[in-house]
Image (cartoon, rainbow, N blue to C red; front, side):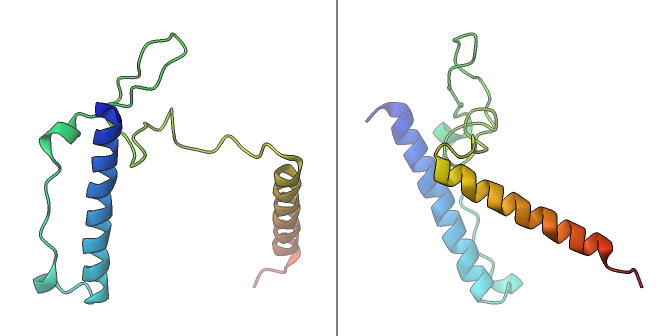
Length: 110
């Protein structure tokens, strides 16, 4: 496993521990005296960069990365459905949304 992959895995584990602490605090009713202690991010993970290849072929230098180890430009949103079944499912959802919007517009306002 490469050094970067190891760091991304450690970053994901850090966020998972943070989520677990928050969940325990939430289950305790968000009591201020039961607030979980903050675990600082390890120093070697603070400046972790995206490093995806840009269009120019150079590595991306952004430091504001998500839990998956990529920035918002190189690992964020989905590229959409690829299969015919997936595209049909998206189209059906869009048509349902359109019907809902028409129904809401046709409803008289109070």
